[in-house]
Image 1 (cartoon, rainbow, N blue to C red):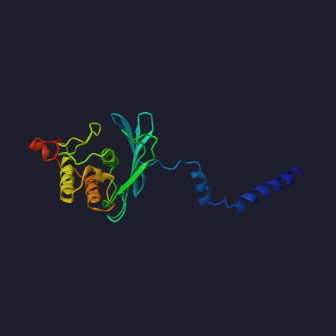
Image 2 (spheres, rainbow, N blue to C red):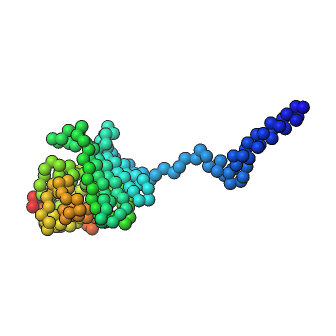
Image 3 (cartoon, rainbow, N blue to C red):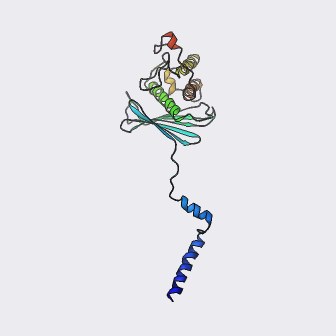
Length: 226
């Protein structure tokens, strides 16, 4: 009787297993995959003078950059998404405002429309985000026209006008001059308008090319007002 009872129990358990489809070889492989962690996204963290920047490849079509202050408070974010010049391929959010604005102010958002047929590298995405952050902050503070060269704060490590990205700023300055733009055009501008396109072009240049130093290096007038 005990042997029979055990056989019944074994049959019932086996029948249950077959009913939920666990006996096949493919199912065994599926069981082995359970518990395995999904691969982590590509991430790059950069320690800056007064902040920390983290760039993440969220998907094959999206790279996100988050910039925090030293205590971990979000300061600025940028999303780079593949798309045409008719789409908002670069979206930014200013989380905390400085100067006359209070840190508790509502986030400020905006976008640019450079054509992105490929994503920037994680480092280049951070460079572009820092450039946008510095220019948007200047725009909100009412600063007017750009100076000669890149005119970036010292904490932007690649901001030397005589570095590999300096000529990007020359193209941007020429575009501003041609279209009557001011530094306030980074925020107070028509989406998709001429000044907006100037800003999208310089971000694309910084993120994807290294054209060399600005012409102000030879002229000796980097940082001087136009």
